[in-house]
Length: 88
Image (cartoon, rainbow, N blue to C red; front, side, top):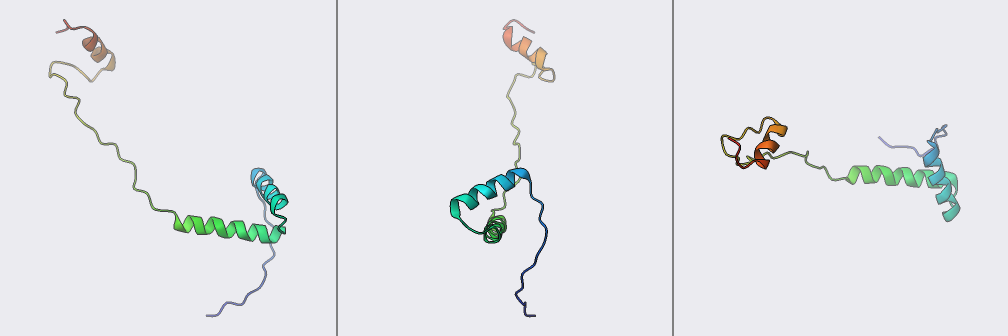
């Protein structure tokens, strides 16, 4: 299949913050709107395609090594036990 090149005209609604950034870039570069929009769309899609896949974050639990007689199911009770050396 061979693609024929042709311009596609469309109405594009963009967010206010994106419009402000685009206008800022247009003033700085002097590029025409069409050229700038195409350039930044290409850059965004290329960056997304090249983004490295990240491994999901995993929590690795570990044992605290507390003595068996300490109750760590209740945070307030554990703090009480840790603060009181005479606790039994």
